[in-house]
Amino acid sequence: MTGDEADRDEPTFEKGFAGAAGEVVELTSLIRRVLAPNPSAFTFHGTNSYIIGRGTVAILDPGPDDAGHVDKLIAATSGEIISHIVVTHTHRDHSPAARLLAARTGAPIVGCAPYVSKAESASEGVRLDASHDLAHEPSQILRDGDSISSPGWMLVAIETPGHASNHVCFSLPEENTLFSGDHVMAWSTSIVSPPDGSMADYMASLDKLRGRDEAIYWPGHGDAVRQPQRFVRGLINHRRQRESAILARLQAGDRTIAEIVPALYSGVPKHLHPAAGQSVLAHLIDLVGRGIVNANGAPTKDAEYRLA
Image 1 (cartoon, helix red, strand yellow):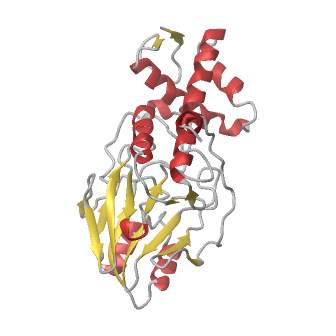
Image 2 (cartoon, rainbow, N blue to C red):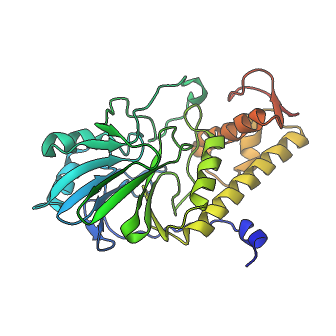
Image 3 (tube, helix red, strand yellow):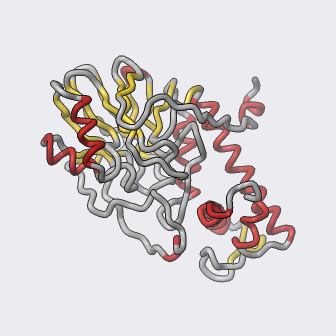
């Protein structure tokens, strides 16, 4: 396959998944997964909490505010020491249980920075499980290249804003593996929802991961991302095609997100159209920033747009 052919790849989404909520699934010699019981249209089967290491372990993304799920994580690590509680980003399906787990174990919360509030007007009317956990206060913020370790494992932070402004992935060099959070998932594209989500940042973060060589990704929802470099190329191409489709709708005379969404998402249930509108808005904000599209004022969900 040539480089140009690879760039035309489309992602092939994987809907299979092993393990019920609360079950401990042995993924590798260093990784166990426990699924939180919070399935939805935005979380798939639920949030994946990962136990990393043996004997002395880290728990990554302990999930929503669910004491029963925390009970499962503590039972799964019985007889082991939890040295770190790691959080990829502060959406409420990922981080709140960190505080419950820290209170019961004394382990420090590390990873992403606290959420910095932005104006929420652009998200009016959109209810996602991905709203932010405003109470998140880590003991240690891990910036790009920072690491934590215990005997037998190390996690290295890779800042990947886009889906969330404070999103961080973590590599596990011992297995050439990446914990990709919600940035790259095998079951679906990630939601990029302004004002916190940024399409420009998301695309730059995809390019950043594309240049890495991890052999497998373990995401925040759904099963593993295999052949991740090809999959990431497919995600980049998918977003470029969506951008081209938005520009084509503007060329055809559409002026508002309300006009664009039904044309581009005709096969998507209408109750998901508000979320689709947020994705279109993220693209339009990026296009306005690049001077390709003009808006009649600030680029918001109610603005009118035209080709520049």
